[in-house]
Length: 263
Image (cartoon, rainbow, N blue to C red; front, top):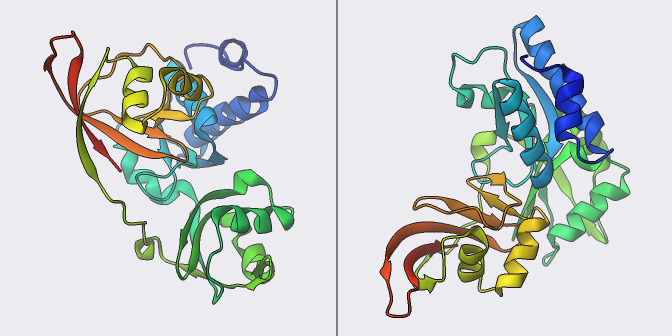
């Protein structure tokens, strides 16, 4: 590493609670080198993913962010021993298992499943995305917690659950309805495009960016003035995704024409 561990932590651990996480990632990176194999972290939220990416890019360390599927919100960092291979080849090293919870009770929400999992005193970082469907839910989890879940996670509220592990190839992603929308923005700043894409006020969009709830191409960005370019995908946690498909000319009032894919 070009910079010392202490220097990197001083630079990127803005909050005291960030230091143990970032220190652990640097330790895992060194372990990947020494052992010659990929080392996965536990699941990180959007803000933590942004910190991890900034730290590891500055340290010049190869890594992969993976949550079990391309558009996952919660993801692990897979620290890689060798930068010569494409990171995507190491997705199977992320240590992520997929569990299917079947139930005859309809209407359970993401909150119901997450609340039941936390009621088992499971650390949040061991659980990834929870995909809810009419059959129940699919739960992405760190492999280390799977035996416990299979034995103990039998209900959510009053609903009885039948839990089983399935292959990652069997993961069923929610079907998203896509809409192509043509609109105008005052500029290509991140907050302007977020406001347009998610039908928010400019202030609401900026607050979401500052709060770390907005991802650009899968990575959090807390800079409302970041300039967007065609092809970039924006994710607003809890709201959906928007791709800036095209940028056109100016209207008579000087506003920029954009085409957005919303889903």
